[in-house]
Length: 396
Image (tube, rainbow, N blue to C red; front, side, top):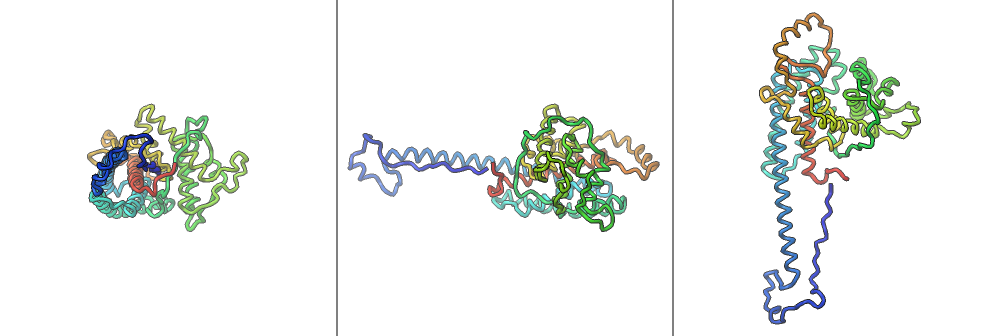
């Protein structure tokens, strides 16, 4: 937010009827001191003190922000170490999340303010992190291509950091757009969502035409009142369409009640409802069942430019979920004891693909939660750096 400076000019005129020092005193006042014997002296001193207080406050805020950036970079460093160990096992959603993070880090490095040695040191750490992620993501993509070639082909564009764009300006949600009622169950399954996304990406067949919008996809992706992952994937549909260069996603929608709604309007409606959902999660207590969608909402609404998802207390909630031993998020240690039975089941059903967001690695780590968490942290990093650059702050 731009802060307009107050008018600080102080009149040097003496108040009518006020006391004036004798001319001898006025004549002897040293000019070079800059402190003429005038009632205007005290206000100038007060303003000088006020200015120092403001400088001190700004310095304290900068130090606090630097500490937060250090914490984020430390968390991402542990996340990168996890990917280095698990690149052969992480699923497609996991690679997509780390690719989003890579795009966010590269943008952060490009715009990083070189204001002081601390900031420069942090940028150096981010550069080193990017080099590690570049290498690990390449290895993970190679493993995906070998282990699940069909699924890899369908979502290959999303595995490159160049697909993802980082917000250059910010906006906020509007809780007046919250649905009057919401379904209790998902509106559609993941298979339908995947199909609609491949039509946008042009990966529905080899050398397929991109940006295809079918009526079933348009109807379900613009349906109001969907909860949880159905809602987040509605936003993801519009976000991926935009980043893939698709226009007229709403072409053919003849509903009179939707005639004036744009793609940006839909994104704001969806994120406003995702904001309400996250607020409800915090109000009711962050449970194991809701934490994954809570973080996913932060990731994709933040990447869509809604800065009010980057709340300081939500950041602490996310960072507390990281396992200090292996660096992933959402680790369930009891899973390790069940690993052998799960592996046997996969051998009996080799053609059954585990749902992307339900993939749990052998060490009990959640591939999906780790993906959305590192992506969300990358978003926080860019937002805090934006706050240091007044030319990129959101208008209000």
